[in-house]
Amino acid sequence: MKARHILPLLPAILPLLTPMPLHANEDMEWQATTLNGEKYYGLNLLRTFYKLTTSDKKGKDGEQMTRNSAFSLGLTPGKREATISGYRVRLSAPVAQDDSGELLVSETDFVKLIDPILRPTYINERRDIQTVILDPGHGGTDSGNKTPLLNESVYTLQLAQELAEELKKQGLNVVLTRNGNHDLSDTDRVEVAANCHNAIFISLHLNSGRSDVYGVETYTTAPLSAGKRAMAGNRYDAANAALAFALHSHMVAATKAPDRALRRAYYTLLNTMPCPAAMVMVGYCTHEKEAANLAAEAYRAELVKGLAAGIITFKNAIRPGAQITVPAAPKPQPPAPVAKPATPAPPKQATPPKKNSGSATKNKNTPPKKRSGSRNRRRNRR
Image (cartoon, rainbow, N blue to C red; front, side, top):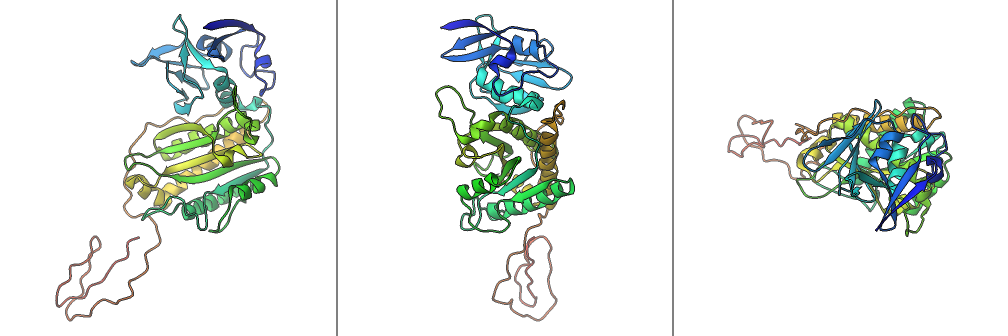
């Protein structure tokens, strides 16, 4: 069953936003379509409000793309995902379609995802950012994901320390939840955030999965919707979305890693945060080539560059009168193998090599074959 409702102007239906739209059509009435108890808004209303071009059908799946000079919005019927300026964002509800074929977006996704990303300067819970809290995932006895090449707790600490240095150069105050490889509970991490004023919280992690899966993912706590119990992190649903999108888009643009979408989940750490927060999965340590990239100093520098740009973008975007800035989305490319990632050399074997008469044998690519009359030397892989 569908019911039509004539709603007042947008400010009355967007409780998390301030009343004056930015570069939007203020003099319009909003019609909501109710599907299974959830309100939806038509793409034509969004197009009119944001002053977007007429949508064009694209591809066999029925995706419709609409745009203005600042951003583009792509929606596909039946799909629980949208694209904003080419970057993937997961929705709380699938895109619906009415009897006329018009695409419909749920009110939850419109109010707590799409609009905060497109107009972060109008987020109600925005604050002038004074402190950036960087949280290296895991630590101590909890190593997180671990492969022969990467240890998550060690890697995230190194990444956080390098990112902190970059942010300090740009005049930001930075706090790390841990500055060594020791145990730290979610409660400890939340306490660090609670002691910082006007802060944002970014938790850094490595991902794992099938050996053929790779790319960048960014998470926020799932937004509050009808029938759900409110959690502390839901106070910042709109700011969470804007922060996560800024981080995700700039990280994908800097590394050119596959875009595995901005996602929402019920992570305890994010659910209990007393400030805007996001969890960044910088890559899959279980994918051979991406793991090699992650371990390389040059690639890690690109990660730092992208994350720092995302933080600065969010900080600037929530200021009054600011405009949205989104980096151009790169075309997905498979990760190129890295010849020699900079990792600590393994300890030498306790048993020394046998001494033989004759010339010494060296081979930079493979261990030398054992032959009589030659000296074997092992080369540590770096």
